[in-house]
Length: 455
Image (cartoon, rainbow, N blue to C red; front, side):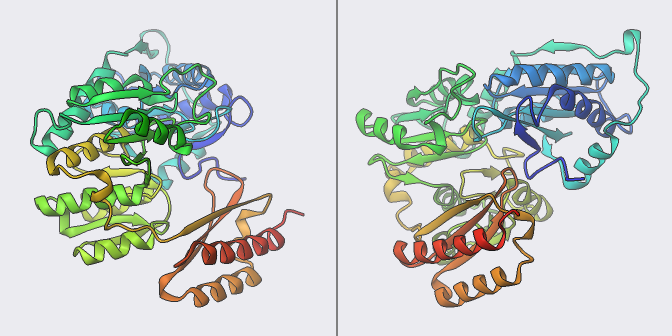
């Protein structure tokens, strides 16, 4: 049987792969796993549940809440809120665990379910396996006053916004860390729509918020971090200092400078790392990044005396490495950035404010701040319609990858990775020129398609 959980919870087409029945089963199983031991500080075990703006969000969050209440858990439903908002509220309210209904950057028709353990931490593989094992097992259902309650707690949204603003004030040492800055924020018609405007203005920014009119059908539709062109155009039109684009659940962001040039997650992380090193707050002068991070980040950090610890792709692996060694900063090229002093997971809203605080504090444009963090040409090809489980076992493909790496030498890189959330294999190539990177990537993609074709 295939594993239910992927790299970021359970995800698939809503009402086909991710159904109300599945949500109920997951809720009951998760309740047993997270409340085992009876450590709750509340009258009954308590869970915080939030969602993004997809039309299926109501359906799945209602089913999840019903399953949780049937297991004797009190549900605090905070409605539409960024994923990191749920993580923070689990910690702030001392809830037993948290649930997010979201498919992040995926198309509107998809949805997903992911969990946060006590303290607001993402769960590891062993916990997910325990939840899967519990699914379908007979359980004793509570009755009468022991049945859980479901409460709408949209008031907790303000707790999260205050946390983000307080965090950037602490980071910058200023009560108005974004004062004097003109910023454009693209909310992708997603979860950031409920928080971005208030947070940016509370931090002192002159904010223009776009794509913050969710209909349930328009999340990520030509907007947000996966479609950054509209943001770049608006930054130029408004003559803004910079812009930020969130994904559907706002756990990550990308930026554009005042000329409309994209600033990716590697550059954002490098920018924050350099500032933290200057301030003496970068633990062991080290950051955590995935194998997908650009070689340009490695070169820039090395020149600044900052080490990089590499992990597998996925913010959960970055988090694991950070927690094991106590590192203070980590992230991904996609824009998941984690600062352990302030967050337990990637937080696009917080990061957007941190970028602004650095610009304001230094009086330097974002373009100039990231100039030293060059991006080597990087080409990513998604190969669909293949058996991604064989990507590391096919000998012909393995030989082709080895030859490609040898031909690129120290100034290039090749990485093949099966997607954790979609049925495809990603081929990533970096080289000194874009033409060379495209040449190698296209050749390898052809081999992947031929060797891993589904019969």
